[in-house]
Length: 548
Image (tube, rainbow, N blue to C red):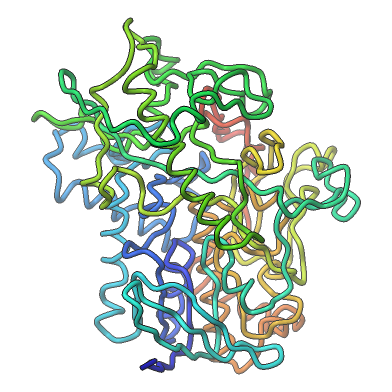
């Protein structure tokens, strides 16, 4: 029998945006439910095994206080629970893995535990309910409003959830799609958006970013951890994607910016300036053995260009195609691991790294792969305002200093326009951006009255969504959506009215900046240079280059 439960706010999707949304709503007095497809909340930072990918100013500015509390708690978790040596324990900006993708590379299961800890007091009070291992099954709509959603547990039990507002924090925009809300996916045409790097021809819904099925690995010299040869190994061993210099399973990649061949080995003996090693192992290392005086093993996240799956899209396809895509993505990642263990040229001579051990004990899976794939692109709502390359791109804003400034800003974020290889055969797109704002108009659907995006499904394009999708950006979007729902319930108004009414907008922005402490405007920083990931160093501006 289907149970029915009533809440103020129903959040479908247990990623960072969903967690941020229920935390914001709880602070405003709403009772909310968080529906997570995985048994691990946190999405990209936990069940998808992607450590935070952040901008260079994150330690001082450019995220909400709630996201900063998450970061602080991660560091505190290691100090309280791990036998760190004195240097690591007292490092004010401890980076558990010393990964060079960002200043806080940490293990996925730690992120999950910290997020559970942040939700715990609200769960205890009955303000937040978490449904784990539940998927969206059906959506009931009356005119321009969602009335309820049906979610199904992995064991088959169904629950009908009703509420005043419904937030979509799923990775693919499932609630947006099933509700019938106007939306877009894939790549837009330049004729529609005017974006310099949009498609020259017609829009292509099948032009969707690659997904990556990440895994955790540790290194144990003298041991043989070679996995069983994957069923699809032969076809991936010979596969050569468009614009790729050779076989996908190799150390040669297509440079993310220039598309020229670039060697990215597992290890390099030649560190760059400052001792940083820009090889694959150190890019997303989440546990650094040097932080311990006792014997410990490095742990790294494998989520590398060779593992980008771009054969089949996930949105707009039937269920057999979706399942095939997910299976092939898993096979690609396992094939790359097997290649590394058995055929890869070693940095120290010889062939193969059998000492690589997949860490299923740390991912909660039998094979060391993440519980969920890392998904970069979602359905995107047709919003009252759409974010374009012209609003944030340096080249598209030639002669203008900084990104577009929005009077309805509900938060700030920063990341390059980073679009991975597409399922239509297009290579990567990597574009300089200015640090940018998140306008309220991008969170307001053109028609639906009680549906809000809370992840990477805001009113953006194929290009600009590549800049808003990473950890602090998704959190800020989710927090703004949860706060907006709370504000509308308390004031008896609607999101479109908040944006249209100057007094309501001012009141809401005051709530964000005052009660929640959300930054609404950037100091003036220089543009984001090519990222240090895979050999590019992102320059942090000196104090003289920025002004309050």
